Structure formats: structure tokens, C-alpha cells
Amino acid sequence: MTPEQELLDESALRILNSLTHPQNDQRTLQGGMAGIHGNQASENNANDADGQQGGQNWTSYPTSSPTLTPTATPTDSPTFQPTLKGVPKTVRGMMWYDANANGVRDSNVVRGEFNDVEYKFGVGGVQMMLRECDWATKTPVAGSVVGASTTSVGTGNRGEPMIVNHDLGGGIYQFTNVQLEKAYYVEATAPSGFNLTSGICNDELVNQGLLDASWACDNAAALTTGSSGVGSVNTGRSRDCIYVDRTGNVTGVINLGVMQIGDSTPLTTNVALLLNFDNGSNGGRRHLQG
Image (tube, rainbow, N blue to C red; front, side):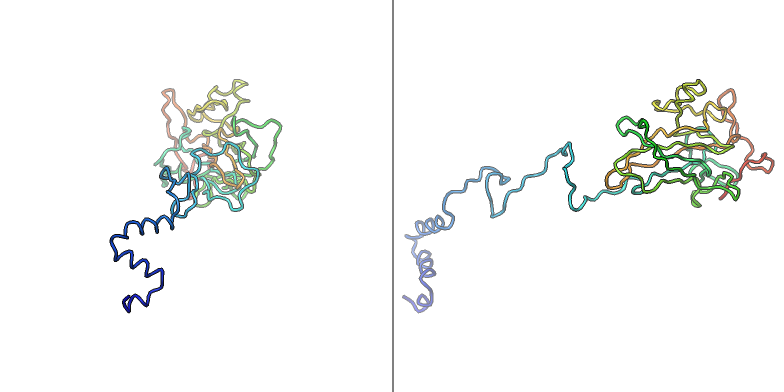
């Protein structure tokens, strides 16, 4: 035995001997491996489903489709979910100014010194009432009355309705701290001198024969042909419902179009004739407030 070998313990010396004596190499190493690992590995696939490979426990992947029914108790910390086009626990929207009274929110409509007025201006003084709807059928819940009411932003000192820039809050309305896990629609009544043109329906007036059947609330598209009374209505309910989930997230907003009576008059050719706008002799028509 060499002086170097004398410094090794018995285990290290045995390993050294196995490496320096080729005749013992194969049997000794195989025996050592068997002692370390014991039996042959029983892994049959690549995802560790039938054992523990590399000392790590196997964890299954989640199912591709969510559970149909929610768990009885919520998780301690809610999952992150951004608000979808809304403010938490708030039903809100815009009474946008339908300057050409066609029921479509058009770009680049010019009135006086203002451009793109249908996206920049809203109508104040529209009275709003919050109601509950059935989220599955998008129809009113019979007998349910939420009762909350509000008025869209933009009125004068005497409470008169005005057409006001969105930057000043014109046309905005909101109902805050609504109940969770419910769906809502709004009832709207335009102020004197204005009518509703878009996003609105009225079954009662349809049933009385005062409105075209396209204004029925189960019809997907309203008829909007101007200020003749066929394409606008003073009161009704929103065609859309929105849902507030258990965390307060809201599925969207409810926007309605509002025209000022006299802004546009339909011709027999169904082409709108734009009347003079805010020319100082308008018989009391409201000015745009920029």
C-alpha cells in the first residue's frame, strides 16, 4: 500500500481499487449501482404520471374546460380579472348627441365651429331609472323594481337640458353600488325638445300601433329615420342588459342616442336636410357647450 492509499478510508480505498483493477471494474460498478438505486426504474411515460422521476412529485394539468357549477366557497384570494369596459359595481353610460338624428353614432359630424360632435358631446337632463333584467333572456324581471333614478349630466341654472362636451361630463350618467350577481337595464325619458334615437325600445307604443314593429324590444335593430316620430321616441328602455358579477365587475356600459328635435328633418327621398344650427334665430334651441 502506498503512502497516499494509507490516507484514504476503507470506502474510498475500495473505489480506488475498483478503478485501478480492470478485472474488477464491471462487476464492482454494477454492484454499486444496484446498491444505490435498488430495483429497475418503472417509469413508462414522459409525464411522470406513474411515478416520481427525479425526486419530483407528479402534478396533473388542469382540465381544458371549466367546472360547470362553481365551488361552494370562493377561494381565499380572488383571481385577477380586469373590469370589462366598466366601473366596478356601477351601471353607467352616455347619452350621446345624435346631431343628424339617424340613430348611428357617426364620425366627423360638424356643427358650427365644432367637429365630430356625436363623439364629443352628450345631452344632459335625460331622466334614467334602473331596472333588473333576466340575464339569460335579456328581458325585464317581472315585479322587480330597483327604484334608483338619476339624470344625465348637463343642465342649465334652471334645470334646462343642454348639449355639453364630454370633457365636462356632458351626457354621462351612473348608478353606483348596485347589487352583485344581477343584470340591469335602464329606462330613459328624454327632456322636452329631445327624443331618443338609438339603443332604445318601447313595446307599449309598438303594441298601440304608434311605433313600427322594429322598435319592439325583441327586435335586433331599431328603425331610425329622423325626427318625424317614426325614428325617435321620447321614452323607452334600453335594448341592452349588463351583468354585475360577484366581484363587482361589469360586462359593459349602456349608451343611448339623443337627438334635438329640429336638428334634422327627413325629406320624402329619405335624405336628411340639415337645418341651420345655432344661428341666433333658432326659436330657443339649445347651444352646444364646448
